[in-house]
Image (tube, rainbow, N blue to C red; front, side):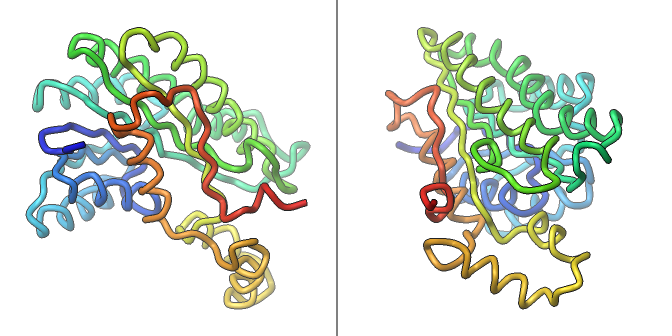
Length: 255
C-alpha cells in the first residue's frame, strides 16, 4: 500500500521503539504526529525527520491525562483532517515487587501503560468512523504472556492491553477499524538499558547474558519492531484484527 498522505499518531515517540516507528512511517511518506511527555525529545525526533525531507509534528502530552489526549487528537484532526493510524507505544516500567509497590506507583504504571491506550482509542475512533476506517496498533510486551520478578504492575498493564485491543477490534470490526497488538521481547532501547544500569554486574556482561539468552542469539532492534507495527497497520493486511503479534526472537517459544 501507499503511505503517502496518511496521518499517524505515535505515542512515546521520543526514543526507543517509538522513534523507530516514527522514522519508518515518515520515510514511507506519512505525516507523523510524535507524542511524548518531554517536548525536547519529540522535537529532536521531529528535526531528524524533517532533515530527511519528511513530515512530522511534535506534541508534548501526558498520555495518562484525558485533557492532554483530547488536545493531541483534536489538534491532529484540525491540522490534517484525519487520523489513519493510532500507535499506542508509551510506557513506563519500574521494577518493584508486589508487596513493595505503593498504590500510587501501581496507578502510575496502569494509567501510563493501559489507561492511555483507552484514552487515545476513545478519542481517535470517532474520527476514524467519520472517514470510513482506520487502524490501531497497541504495543504490549511479552510480559503479557510470561514475566519476571518485580514486574507485577508492568505485566498486568501489558496483559490488559491485549484484552482491551481484542475488545476494540470486536466493537468496530464491521466499521473498518482494525485493532491489533504487538508484543516485543527484549529490544535494545533506553528502557532495557535502564533495567541493567543499577546492577552490580558490568553492563557489557549483562548485555552479553541478554543476547545469549535469546533463542535467536541477540536482543532485537527497535527497527525490527517498527516493521511489525507497520505490517499490522497496513491496509494490505485488511483481514487481521484482534490479533497479538509476538516479536521476541523466540523467547516465549522456549521451555
